[in-house]
Amino acid sequence: MYWMIVFILICSDSLKAVASTNCRDDYTSFRGSCYHFGHVQGTYTESEHYCRQRGGHLAHIMTSLENDFVKNHAREMQPHHWWIGLNDQVVEGHFIWDDDDTEATFTDWGTNQPQGGAEDCVALDYLDGFMWGDFPCTMQLFPVCKAQPEGEEIIG
Ligand SMILES: [Ca+2]
Image: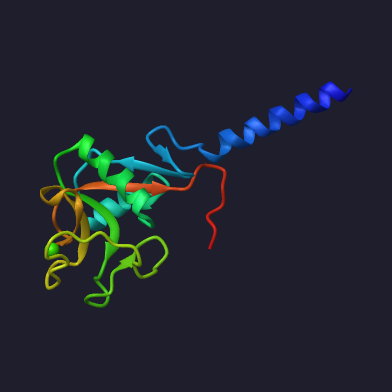
């Protein structure tokens, strides 16, 4: 009986460990979140729709560590700009994340960025080491999507 309980405890623990990184097939896990680097170019709005159809949003990047992961992965995928989920379309100069409407605290702006004006949407700029730049939202770029692991509630 004792060993059966131990066995059940071990099994339930390993199930939990699997669940915490249970990303969809087309997503890669990193530190408890799931990332998808899309193969289809689109405008900022089209790319956000693309991510929502796959259970996520354009990526909300919170830390330097996460930013490095996303930049390195994008670099391996395509020598191109990649949309992330940040824009200042509502109030010029106030960059807001699409997934939770919060203002950006961590940023990684490239040289002379953001420029503002007609450039309201943020992408990783491959011409500047994949640091962030604001671009016209109508540009056709690749999407970085981010989602929570399956079976977990999004907090907040
Ligand atoms: Ca810019």
